[in-house]
Image (cartoon, rainbow, N blue to C red; front, side, top):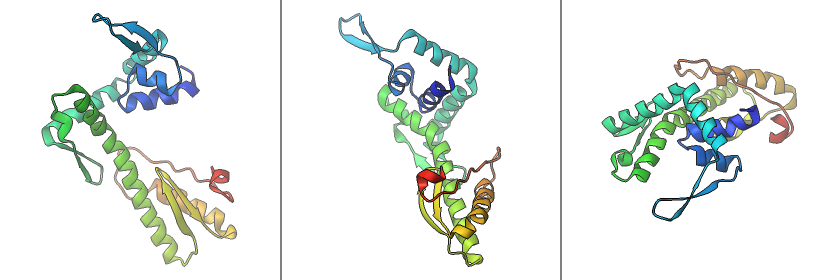
Length: 193
């Protein structure tokens, strides 16, 4: 699968979607089919179903993670981030498949996205304290997902860039993998990307 197509496939499948979700995210038309009862349905084209099959075959650990985290959530009733924030998901035991599957997707996503939010919050606090301690006029303007937008004096831009890269990559949260922070500089958010 080409790189530009891999991202929507990866995100769709990581967030619990299947071949129909992948098709929709990539604007690939769905095929109509007739069910045994005579009603019509939509399904993904064969090449999309093959991408999904290969993904699950190649990244079986992701599929196993989703199963394990759903089982753990069923046992505990909640999932947690690395810092211990909990999300209770009572629907993880619901008899209706659609409702239960939604809770299973939430169970898999919460530790990942919630931990990313924890990391961003801890990094922002460390950045703010660091700049305050050195009497910097640098200000945090906005946080969106894993991006932090700051404003600083032009002559401090390279120093602030280094500080952000160091603090964001080492926020003080124990993780099993290293973090990498990419920092851009520009006169606008778009220019800094």
